[in-house]
Amino acid sequence: MWNYRKLSSNDSPMAEILDRCSCKSNIRLVVYHLSENHVECATTPDVDKLRLGETARTIKADSRHNHAILAYDLGTDEVYKIEDVPELPVASAVLLCVVTELLNGCVQPRENQYGIPTAARRAVSTPNRAANGRFVKDPPCERMEEPARPTRIVSNGTPLVGHRFRLGKH
Image 1 (spheres, rainbow, N blue to C red):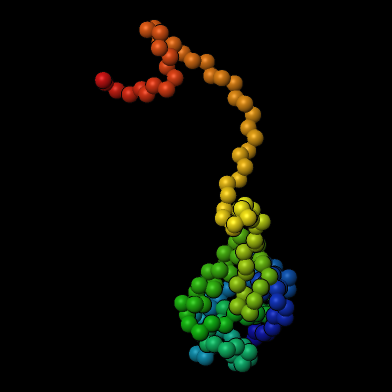
Image 2: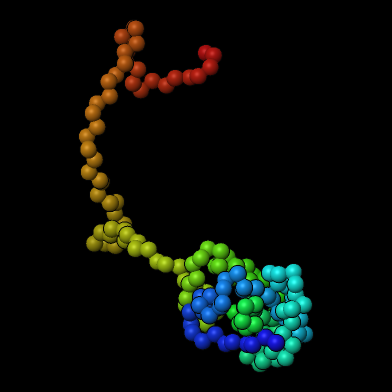
């Protein structure tokens, strides 16, 4: 029998699951159809032991949609709902994001009700504007003076600087 554990905070669901789980290697991710009470897809081939039975009703009562992305902890027989979604393709996309988040090791907190992390904003240099509001060029950077290149002189006395050369037969 699986014990359904609700996630409490606004942190990333995976961060909370990883804090609570017995071991990372015991975690299995599953897309479950709550109304029909069966596994749609799982990260393990042995789906028979992942059937929820009566626990599916409890999770369905806590969900708005029929498909749920669940995390099973095989060490403690606990199941966590990561998210519930209306359709299987959406569930697959969310599951892909969860797996990517786990593989990258950067479990981020939820920034809004949908769990979409926002990108970190970098300090952007603002362009310079004149008094009339038009953009103006940045002042040129101070460069160190490069030493003059020595010019090569061909046998007839003309310098090679500024001449183009063609490769191949002429």
